[in-house]
Image (cartoon, rainbow, N blue to C red; front, side, top):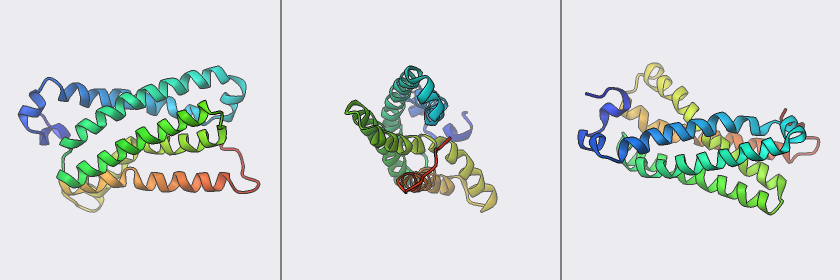
Length: 181
């Protein structure tokens, strides 16, 4: 018997040849994106080692693509039913779309637009962290059952992140905005 999140999945799903590779692939490639992505916001890295910044950016985009596509498939089987499934599907679509927009922006040499799209993309990537912060708070702090908490966290893991991202983008566009570093 599997425990934790996978414990709520049907045995036939877990025994399928495709679910577990997608599930762990999503975690692995998303984890690499999470680790690589934060360094991309360093103005010092961009200024002093632009080629490293570009290479890490390519790695980030590849990792997001793999993790994001797998997330869209496994979202259909999310614990918590349609509410959680929709939340994780919206997250996956937005993550892929914002990353794509960032790539298109930089290919068109629209650096500022690229930076804004990457802020959005990484805010969505960071949902992996905020999910793990919110879930124990909802269960332990508010006393919710796991399934109810998971339905909420499917949205709570990324909607506040996007609000913060949009506030950062707004702030960066204000006169005399300071460097992120």
